[in-house]
Length: 341
View 1: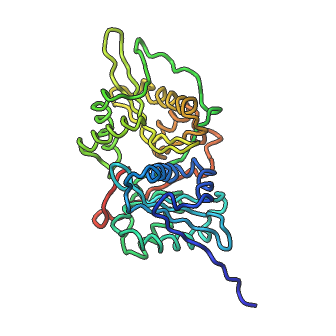
View 2: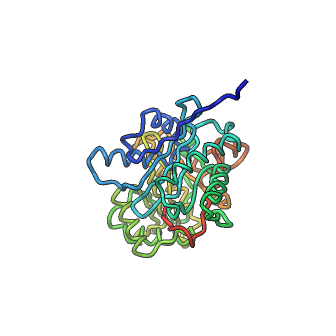
View 3: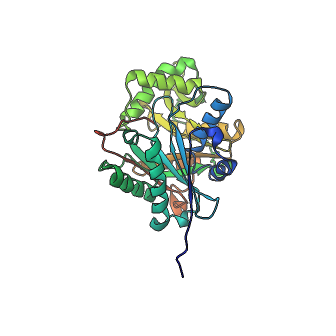
């Protein structure tokens, strides 16, 4: 009896308006997991519909299961205002399905397509669930000869918060210090730029020059995607101690993409106060169902902050949730062009 034959479809889209409705639905079903791809697609779609010029070198590669229209994976090669994003890969299936035998042939098919639309120097890193990243890096090295960096750029947990998990308790008062969280305005741009610069210094290799940090701050404020936390004592002017940015947002999910506290103000629970306030704003004013974020697995203090706010799966008996571990693997920096995210 002849062996069964299986057909699969791997499609490339370079315009968001061309992406079929069933792919959008699959991404929306996994909005938290798809926070690196779906919001960018939404942004590009809006720009295309308004007749705006969008980068022509962006691509989305969709893998459909054999003999099925079910979407298993989507891979993106996209840009932001500062530079290229990593290659993002999102599985749109249940976590139990993510075995080596399931993942590898699908990645091989998508990588074959990626090589037809992307220069190999563009692929400076990949960010995906742990096993997916490792398998992609092996396949990429086999096909291009470009080796992975010895240490991951980012080893993280994906978590999320909902209105029901958000902790509403107030923080303990700190001496006579007055705390205030608010949306940023144009007058805050120089200070936000300073904190963006400091944040990037701790995010090797994605460091920023002073001018690049200033540009990022202008983009964040202009897009209304950053809040600040001020501290003051009676009789003094408020100082911005902490920032929180949320730059990847879809209809139901917002993603907090940057939280940074000036070293001089650490220990005052500024980040915890600010993140809680930002989450409340995103739920009540923006109508989001979830707020997601990544936290480095080596950042125990940050994980505790987010746990105290109400992000799930970071501490205690519930510290295992689906899609938790995500890994960014970089490729030989002498052979690629770094982007920024």
